[in-house]
Image (cartoon, rainbow, N blue to C red; front, side, top):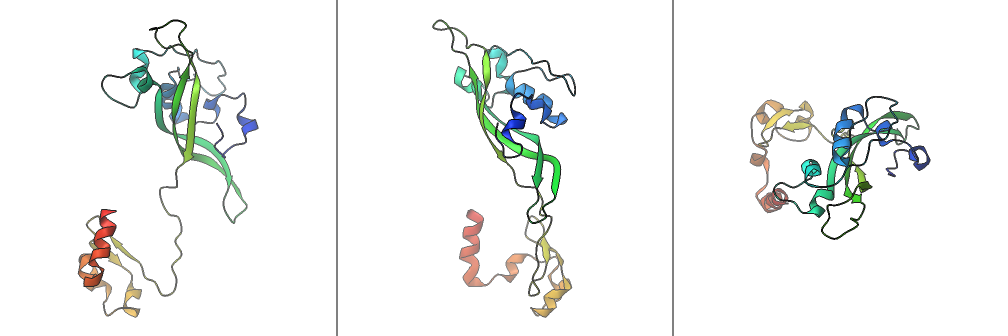
Length: 195
């Protein structure tokens, strides 16, 4: 795995479980068809499973499955990260959420119509997910803040709105944003909803 979170040299020869968040060990083991490690520092490697109908519980699709479907994997996992935050030049350690998609690679059966062989490993591509919340948004002096619910009804409005519009916050709270859209903008807004 090269996730740009850790140096490849650090990962070489190490157990993936040394880098996976402890709460995700069972998920990773299940996706790989392995038994989860017993605890920190546990270096015994689990035996590679035989791929067959019993290994399909971690497969992505429901119902009858061919051998190819059993091999497909897509899951989310938290991996150790020691990235430098942009502009701060301070190293922070923690975990990043990674989306892993790929296939288990198995040994070819030695004779036709045989069950798939032992798992050799996972060939996958991993992407980091963006943080779930914005921690900082720059508000310029000519902007104001307002919050809406899922129906786009205004639930909060900053008092600075009076500097830019002929409304005070109490006149906007509880009203739909659609009441303030110019008629010529409706088509563009409608297209944004469809996209």
